[in-house]
Image (cartoon, rainbow, N blue to C red):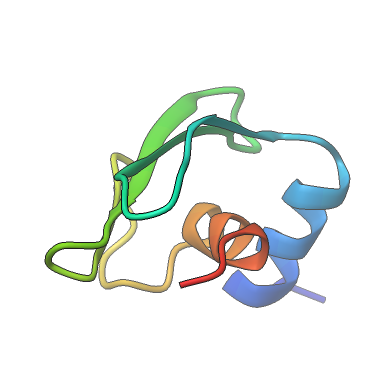
Length: 75
């Protein structure tokens, strides 16, 4: 069975693949997430524009790396 982005993001989080580098009230959030290929992607959230970003090649806003980050960020 193939994992969807939600399942994969939860797995990455429980496997300890997400590292939050900077976070704080009203500040941009910067993080890294190691994908299944071993590549490390840069991701984050900008509260001024309410935008999420990830350096992975996934199309759209539903990448598994951002799923993992959204599980630990309260916005």
